[in-house]
Image 1 (tube, helix red, strand yellow):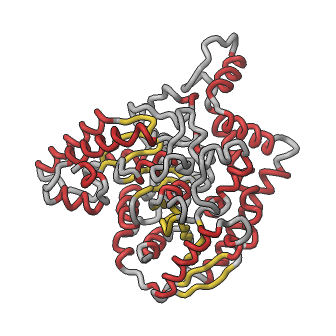
Image 2: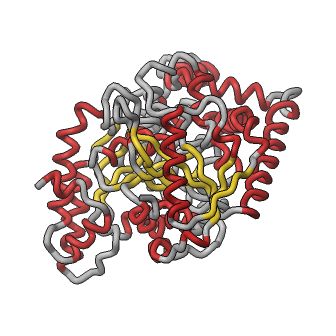
Image 3: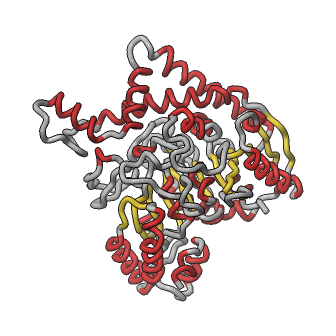
Length: 478
C-alpha cells in the first residue's frame, strides 16, 4: 500500500482525499515510510520533518472533517530545497556556515503552501548555496541518483529532484539560478519548471545571484506543475521583483492547446559540437512527434549563445560575492569562538564555514567587481546579457516556443567532473540563457540511454509569463 500511495500524482492524491478513500495522515505516514526505506541509499534530505508533517496532516484531517474546502494541494506531502527559510525548522543551504541556523520566519512560498494545507515532510540536499551541477558540493554529503546510485542526480537541486523521482514526496519546491531545477529534473527523469523572473516570490529564500534566482516546482508531470503554480505564483509586497501580473488558470490552459497553431523554434546553436548523440536523438524524436501532431517547426538562431556561460559566471559570481558577504560570523550562522578580534572573526568564520566552491565563486566575483575591472568584466557581461535577451525576443517574434536539450550529456558518474570546475560549469550551457533573459523554461523527460537506462531531458523555452503555454506544449508529448 505504501508504494501505491507514494507514487500518486497530485491529481490522483487529491481525488482520493476528496472522496475520503484515504486521509492526509495515511498519505503522510506512507510518504515518511518511503523516506525511511529510500533515504539510506539516496540521501536526498538534510532534515526530515516527521513530527511537523504528522501534526500538519492531523490538522488537515480535522479541517476536512469540519467541512473545510479541499484544495488541489491540501494534504499533499512535499519537500523543499534547503534554501527555503522555514520557521523553527533547520535551514542550511547545505553549507556549514548555516549548519545550526533556525529561521524566525518562513519564505512566502512556504507560507502559501501552509495556507492550502500542503504538508512539508523535509528539507532537501543541494550544492551549498546553489553552487554546482551535481550536488557534490554539499557540506552534508552527496545525493545519489535514484535511477542508478553510481550517478549524480544533477544540481544544485539534486536532493529535490531525487526525492520526487524516488517517490519521497509528491512534489518539491526548488530554486533555479542557472539550471538548478531543469538539469536535475533531466538527470532524474522528472518534470521541472523554471519560471519567469519574478513570477514567484523569492522572499525568504537564501540568495545565490539575486538578478538570476527563480523559484519553481519539481514534480511528476505538467498537470501537477500547473496546480502548484496556481498556488505559489503571484505578486508579493515583500519581494519588489514580483510584478503585479494576474496568475492564470494554468490547469485550464493544459486542456486547450491546438498544436497545429504552435510554431516550434529549433535554435541551431544548441545542436552543435559537444552534444551527446543519444541526447540529440531523443530530443529530435520528440520534435518529430510534435510535427506529427500538427506543430510547425522552424530553425532559428540565437547568435550570442556562445557568450552565455562566460557572461553568466561573471554575473552570478559577482552577485554571490555580494550576497555571501552577509555571513560574517556576527549576526547569524557559524562563528569562530577563538577569534581574537572582529577582523579575525570574519576571516576564521568564513574560512571554516564556506566550502571550496563558495570560496572560488567569492574570489571570482570580488575580482570582477573590483576597481579597475568592473567595466571590463561585470559591466561587459551585463551588456552581453542584454544581447542574449534580445536574441530571444527576436526568435519569439517568429515562433511560439523553443525546444532544446536540457543538458549536453546524460547523468555522469560521481567524480567525473568535480575535479575540473570549468567542465562542471559547462554542464549549464543550455540552461543559463533562460536565467540571463528572465524567461521560463521547462524540463520534461523524453527518453533514456541505451546502455545504462539513464534519463534524458528536453527543455521547452518561451517568452516571459508563458509558463502555461510551456506546460500545455509539454503535455502533448507522446
